[in-house]
Amino acid sequence: MFEKLHQIWKAKDLRRSILFVLLMLVVFRLAAHIPIPGVNAVALKNLFDNNQILGMMNLFSGGGMENFSIVMMGIAPYITSSIIFQLLGMIVPKIEEMQKEESGRQKINMWTRWATVPLAAMQAYGMIALLRRSSSGILGAVSPFDLLAIVITITAGTVLLMWIGELISEKKIGNGISLLIFAGIVAVIPQKVIQISQTFDFSQLFMLIGFAIVGLITIIGVVIINEGQRNIPVQYARQIRGNRAFGGSSSHLPLRVNMAGVIPIIFAISVVLFPSMIAQFTVHARSVWLAHFSQQVIDLFANQLFYGIVYFILVFAFTYFYTEIVFHPDQIAENLQKQGGFIPGIRPGKHTADYLAYTTHKIIFAGALFLGLIAVLPLIAKYFTGVQAFAIGGTSLLIVVSVVIETVKQIEAQLTMREYDGI
Image 1: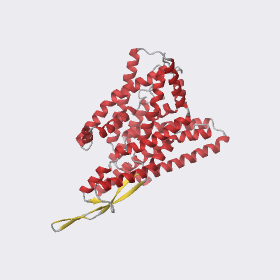
Image 2: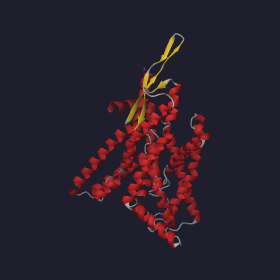
Image 3: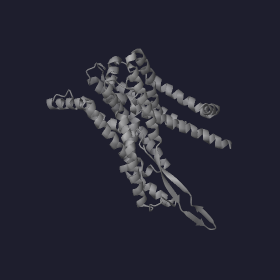
Image 4: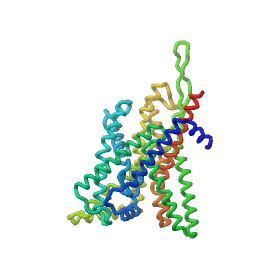
């Protein structure tokens, strides 16, 4: 490890890239602590501590929502915009064709940035309206001009983070959006450690040790699932051109256990959040039946057992759904056939596509089950212990470990390229 660190420090351009990324993360954390005036910070913190759904929204905002900062929406609108265009690629043939070409992908990226702006404005207005309707006194009276200024400021904060994320990605030191979320998660650890140390009692020692062991096992599980893959053998036919023979080699096609990453959890959070958010707007409606129904919806999703079951099922289902979006067995089978490749014992074409689809569905069952358990892990721990078990939850651990693995791989790839250049 120390040898790798020494090599990184010796590579001048790589060192500059890492320092630039760290500087951008510092800028992000500073922005996350610049609050918008007129907010009751204590009441806001209590609301996020006692609400599992808002806590997950705060996670993907990088911690900025808890402070009602200028970057309170984080990069969630950008993620939503990206997901929308990925889904459109499945139903709009023109967008699907554009995704296959570099110029088309650049256009889609530009549209994704433009769509982020109205999404950020709508989400900012929705969050402000929710806080104004809450009975916690979080946000006082706001004039229409102040409301417009707040929405514009929050939208500009999202655009700023989107720009910072793309600058980080250009340095090839990990994905910029993932690193911003990673920074927001890791930033809460010192505060949680201080809180635990201040309220520490020796009677809690075995419970804390148990939590540490569960956390370690979770990290090991995340690494195993993230790196787990099944290698499908591929054989390439030998081709004769003139007096020379080409091909005849063997390779493998890696099928990952977790192809979807944390996207299913983001999808599930959006769906679980939607009924409660709508109910919060209508709970004070003049219509008695609508107000009563809205209160029932809020109470239902406040039930930890119901919330956990629905959350698990949605994560499990969205894992399969998103894998269908990103993995196309028909295209892979077609490309293999064009290159003269085939899977031993499987006929090329449709039979290969069916085999890959069947194998993938079996493999991702373990990945979907794991993601679902990771998502509800804090709820399970809280049910058995009665306390919030982890400084960061299972989803947070999944994101942190995944980002660290991805970043380390990209840095090692750059070091390997420099070794080849030296040769």
